Length: 137
Image 1 (cartoon, rainbow, N blue to C red):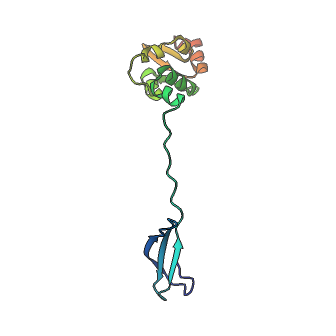
Image 2 (cartoon, one colour):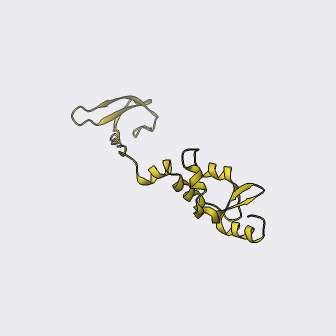
Image 3 (cartoon, rainbow, N blue to C red):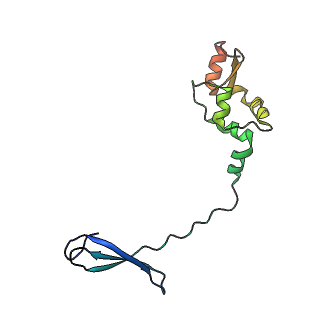
């Protein structure tokens, strides 16, 4: 901070709170001319209340394996193939009850193909192209 009178450097020299208005002030003293200056500090930020409970989306994204698989399938990129274990990691699925049923749901057959005993997941168009070429089954 610079002194408005002599342009010398000012140092902090204590602070206090006004008892009546609960406003905080900071006192500065100039090193050169010893002038005192009091600055009002900004009001304290209002406390942020944490929301109570969680939304439906948050609840589903934590516990619903079908929802996790659906989100992961929608994010699959064209011409990028993921093994089943990679897909499970990307989707954030944990080995809980029902994760196998969520992966084996017939509505995801268009996004997965098998070759040499390994299941691959990819965009629908990429899987269709590889199945037409006879690479995936």
